[in-house]
Image 1 (tube, one colour):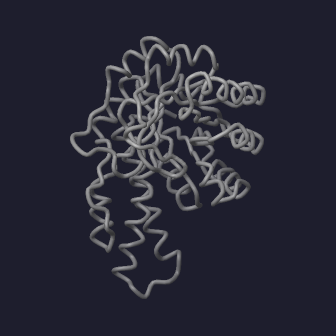
Image 2 (cartoon, rainbow, N blue to C red):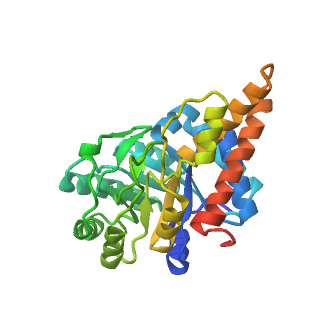
Image 3 (cartoon, one colour):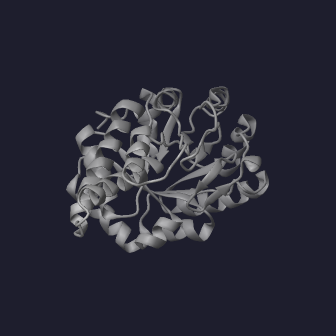
Length: 310
């Protein structure tokens, strides 16, 4: 199966009440793990890369690895997506390189400027058969290019969301309902504004909704990292049960990044502590890859409900 856009994926997810995981990638092992998990759980999947990940992996290498992934698992519907595209030029580069979906994140600007930039990307992308995700509202936290203080974070206004979609023609919309980027999402009890989500869905029922900053920051992975020499105190993400509720409440796409990084780091740390003479990358990357695969399968089967959908 060739690469697909998210259009049909989201149409099916909205009809049947589940979410599709969008997993950030930047090397071969992560891509292999995600694709193996998708094949084993029979789930559609979105592979996504930020502009910094693209700089690291280099876009041609990245696209060739994705090409290999779909050749190895032709039964899995796969979209390749730009995560948090910072400007038109980055989005255009990815579209021209073969991405089937791009995000333009102009949420740091005022409403009219956000509309203007998003519309420019939408016009070019749709001309090339590519779909566009945009963002309205601002999530706090630090991750890759995203660095937003708590004071600058703001919830999405549902009425503005409707106006924004109508003016830009974007295909999906990332909204801010309380999630945040990075491994330190909550200082107290984790809580999302499901009332805002419900109102957004009421006003734009046919627009797929996206949650960013929604890694669980799986406690077992944090504990494993710390056990083998890490120092990640107090990391706290969005609990699986809340993400499961979001998946059933109209969210079509949930981004996962931190959990994959934790899984890779924990797997590598464990090998280095238990086998200090290990120096072959295959020796420490193989267990890390397996841990990522199991993490992704858990998300697809137990949290997002996307297993057995292909």
